[in-house]
Image 1 (cartoon, rainbow, N blue to C red):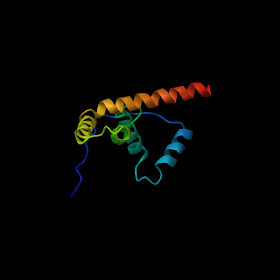
Image 2 (image 1 turned 180 degrees about the vertical axis):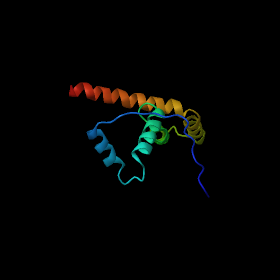
Image 3 (image 1 turned 30 degrees about the horizontal axis):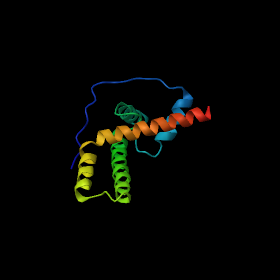
Image 4 (image 1 turned 90 degrees about the horizontal axis):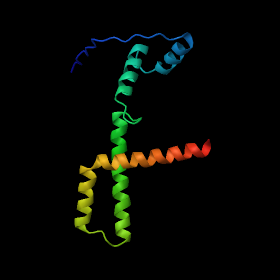
Length: 122
């Protein structure tokens, strides 16, 4: 199956000094991409960036956050002897439908901890 050619109607130009060009060539070496293609991909990846995460990283983070939520709440309810089939179904439904809430809370928690660590170092 042949790949369709992608149409790029807009151009971006920039200049690099010799040192930056050598660094770029070293990063691109072995990727099968030209420096121009690599920079295009880097720019598009940055445009898709959400809170420091690319789309695929955001998806993986959401899945990990959902799992952490379900495991944490599930084990706590088991320990308290309060986990029923109905409660577990409610938790799973919430984790599925409100993944954005869970993810935002996890990101906020992580960011607050990393900011606190940065203050300790300073």
